[in-house]
Image (cartoon, rainbow, N blue to C red; front, side, top):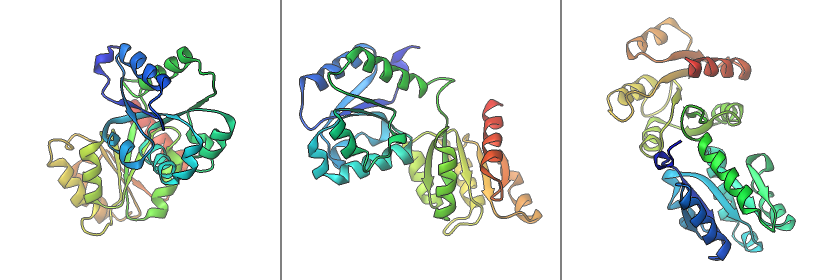
Length: 254
């Protein structure tokens, strides 16, 4: 792969500007992977939110004093599909995983740090987010937060998954992040599903994003009202996890 084509960034988070952190940035730069340094604050990390693909967190005891940062990282990793690699000792790892679940961590490197192995792991992560084999991104748009969270849990291990509670939030999300598919509810406040789909179709930036309805509306009138908008599929919320994953697998293989 031509690394000049990789758009996503690696954000290296450390309480201090150490030689190790700077050395990592230099090595990543030599491989063509974009990286940035950030101190462990919500504002500092959030400055790179739009194009952040992977976070490398140099853990320290100071993190216990700034729980908002760990909460923000947890939300970023779980809701936006950003990868997370941790570097530090056992005690520091236990501090972090009180907030960020272990299954959300790609890998934990203990000190002394094996820099070559870390670079290989980062390279593999970035390769997975690019090209034909990259993890696909799905945006769920639904005002039923409980149901949306359930679908998120079903999909998060296989896909990058984002969430929006209405059309306005979805459009705002899509202005910052690219997705491969939108799962759209039919009945929502402000603008319903068909209206949101129509807005997406009429925008050059979002017009080609495939949209599947995932809704409780099974009546013929509702289905026929969106046929002209050419959704990729029309699925009912009675679908279970196994069959939804099969539908998505089939769609992306096509």
